Image 1: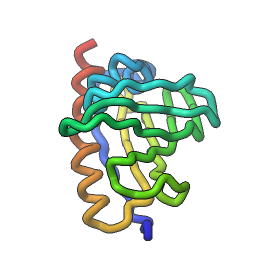
Image 2 (image 1 turned 120 degrees about the vertical axis):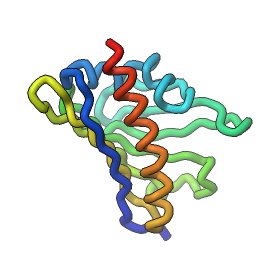
Image 3 (image 1 turned 60 degrees about the vertical axis):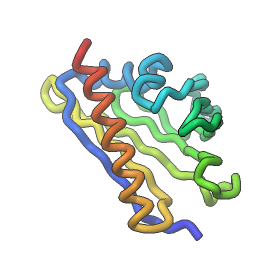
Image 4 (image 1 turned 90 degrees about the horizontal axis):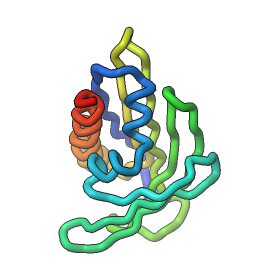
Length: 143
């Protein structure tokens, strides 16, 4: 049964929030920082998100729905991956919250994922998100 363990990753990016927002919502950049996944979405609240790719030689299609969109500030969406071995049921979805905070020309990007079943699962997710936000930082800072 899922728990309420939260994985959180954060970094400060030497770029304005509007630019960081452009990176996290651009399908080309998403492919670069999201482990090679192709993202399909129209960014409307209630609309679907689909990530397609290959992980360790297996094709996958993750999915979710947009919950909140505040350009330059906050993006909230659900996420489900069949690679986790869980049934595709609402209680097995995570909510990912991307928060962008202006730091006087720089931006603090925080990504949190809820609904991890154990502390170990949250720690595993945090390790993955730490790599991802580091890649967002690299992409945003290179211009």
